[in-house]
Image 1 (tube, one colour):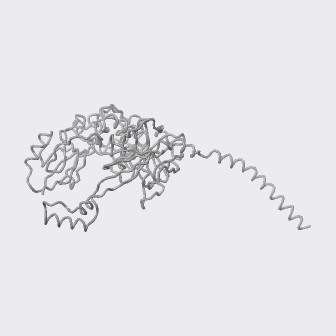
Image 2 (image 1 turned 135 degrees about the vertical axis):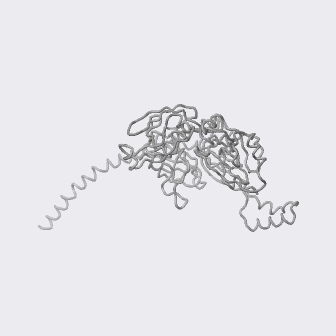
Image 3 (image 1 turned 30 degrees about the horizontal axis):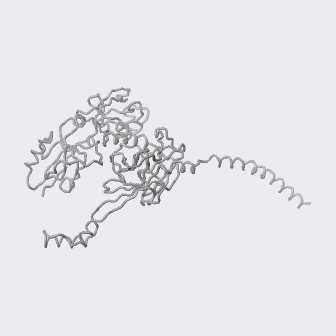
Length: 471
């Protein structure tokens, strides 16, 4: 009798359990049916994804060969090197990346760092057709490059609105990690408006994801579940060089702005306010009667800058730009950089506990027009400093409030050793003002044969001095 009671009790316990299982199974099946359909997304967009292979001639790293080469040059300076040493002296170096087609006539987007310095760019389509690409233009600050291949009736992608992206939504990347062509990886958006640690400029407010991005994924698209491109995979944050689950994509709205300018002119113009800023912490918020920490605190207004002309003062806190709230200081350069020079914009400022609205005519960021163009252009003659220069655009001259010459190319020599960059604006040479090309040439001819020469430059809205050593 006792055994029968135990058996009945066991059955009585199992009945609700079985009922619960039967109740939950249909729900589990239904939820599984609601999972993202990545397969259809890949099938629909895969044909527009390309693999990019680059080739660049670079000096071989061979200390023994270098020693032999130097010895032979000293013994016979007028004689050519033996063929085996000449071949070892310069060897091709390859790279891989990803990209995607944005027009039926062959325009392709990828990263600047994928094609930078490449002597040859090979684009392989999903159907295994191979094309040689030429560079229409590249922009280093946004890490966007625009290529062109000679083809027609190509499959293309559709762009989405990166502003509408939400943290937590599903995304899919397609690219060529480690050269493995047309590989897909999924994840979620883990953060927005992200400044990459260690990045010197904040002209891109990245989309952060946990998608597995590795070497070779650079330049590939990031899709939302509607199959629209909302980002370009650009960087990873890793202690090992491999994917650690933190990757960064350039927002599609930023990329489209850059690509439009590259197609029109081969260069990119960015807005400039002319202020030095920092984050608002709790103490600053309390001291300046802010309800909470937010905005960009103005440490210094640059003399003659658009900000000064608009009435911005030191210790102002910029809380909005053109109606967009500024939560952290890194957001301000990003928003300003998307505005073309000469455009009017609205600044919302906290000043002495009150809200002030100012109208500002955005200036031009010095050096923002850096672009590598496919057309062969005769560069200006190089000078003793190891660089080539050109005149200033009127917008750049107005933005920095002084004359100068702009660095177009940095060659081997004193300029490269001192840290000069393309796009820097030289305003003084050896303590002498150089407002134009003629003045620069005159001062250059008077430089000493040897010694140290100070060079005053403007870079990204800030002035600094470099020292060149003439040997």
